[in-house]
Image 1: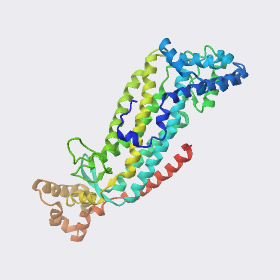
Image 2: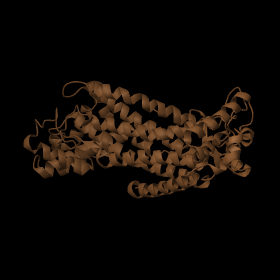
Image 3: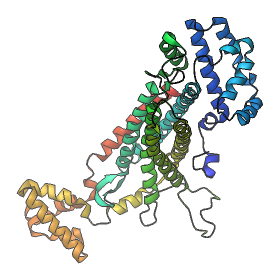
Image 4: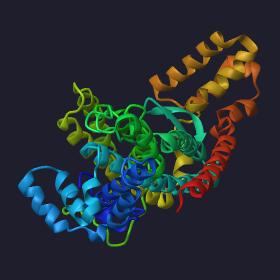
Length: 456
């Protein structure tokens, strides 16, 4: 197991992905590919149709002597041929046509993508649950005032619902890309030793297409064993899905600081944060998301180097890509199952958010004052006046609100009540509420679509 696990890994819903990442699931995928190849070859007259039917009937998991496969593996030192040998024996007379005209990577890589496509369906269902949770947050806190922050400092006021809307928007974008890949990115390969159909001849391309159709995968246009773009793209898409979840975890992690106190993870009775500091309540879900996300990013670059190896195939490339594909799916699973729990149980301290928005005594509303003043005297001059007031407040440690209310230029153009209104963060949240509600609806709609498409 290459993903980073903790106690949450044992208690959270994995949507059946752990089972699909097992060795048994890999073997089943190999059997499915071999059966599809036999079926297609029978249909095309490459092998006798009755032989193809016999292979399909015999190539079942329970019919294979897996102990013998493992014994031969130790003797032969080949990762796949023991499987072919035992499968052939299990098929009796028909066994002489098992694995006919194809090669190891044809079956292994196609099998990997067969499993990956099923895992991807589960990933999209996980995302649908996360989107539902985010939609609920965006609606519930659509008008919950808080400070917006840029460069780690207060910017202009927003609502927490708006912040969640930005999370939703990014997750929706990544989801759409993943859906697009799901429809055509998972490829099958059936071209033989180097992909040129040397053993299959003119029927090779037709066989390649038919095997893909049987398995529900997209046949590679040129089934070269040294073309790895589909694996690279899929792992990139997984990293893109994980990235906005990573940002959510980072924001929860940072704003749960006692000095900020806006968000926190739900405390579970009996949960221990530290072996030496009894008071510790740590962000356990967030840290797991962050760690697994960062590990996923770290593997992407290495794959580009591996995929550029020369000639028609290289087992060092296959070994790395096969391992990292499984690793990427495991890491994504760990991130998303934590994210589903986090987004469902996150604690939102809206009172503290509002308190933080008023912390700067109106300083966050300098743009509001400047824009209104600009209508009277132009933006450059308005910026200069408000800038001087803001810097005076920072330099002297005085109240920005008091300095605004005392400013002669501002009092010339605005009444006291108008200035107080412009200083109030509640009056300068833009379209935060509307955006929050709009994105919440999009999230709910997309969650429904995902369940309709991918929930078995």
